[in-house]
Length: 257
Image 1 (cartoon, rainbow, N blue to C red):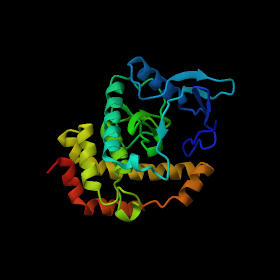
Image 2: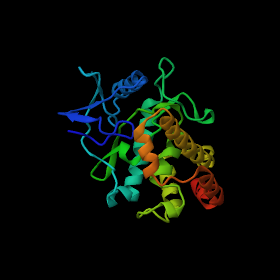
Image 3: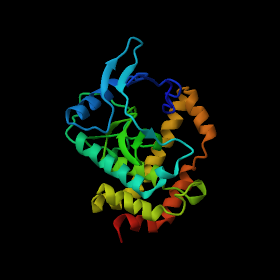
Image 4: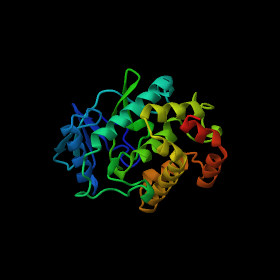
């Protein structure tokens, strides 16, 4: 059974019984070590690494549930769903806190100011979180995981799930609710005051990082990213930065002031 897959793996991810088969990458051993750690510490919100099949594909456990795919269902845009994403992300960070990333080779890391010893997921798009009964239960697609920080992951998730962007680029029920949704998300996660004060800077860096990542894949000849860029109504980085700087109300909201 063919599964949606991400941009790079679209059309290449399949379900076989209770397993998922995916193409490997040069950095797959690092992701496999991470998944083994998560299994060892009893974190249920990620697939288990089961090995490599005869075709050289990584074999992961299949997690029952529903990823959020467009057109986004109403239940995925509720405050309850948003709260559950923050709770799941905090649980992941607690589970990965004592994992040592240094023996492994990782994909490109976030900006240096956002990098620490914690391995962040780095790709918390809506289709990379599995839901059951309206609540987030698991993270999938650890292809971009690398040393980062919890602030970096929170910024990534907030950018996509709140979402943090001009209302002209929001076409669903989340439009016009950025302040309350951001306050809910950072509160449910539990960022400290210093981290909250740096959320919007991290969001801007995350948007720029992802933009550069797409351009890097295009330069490397990945056709899927070329199609993605043509189809996506992406906000120009300069316009995005201007919007963030003009929205001090959002910054105050993260501090609860």
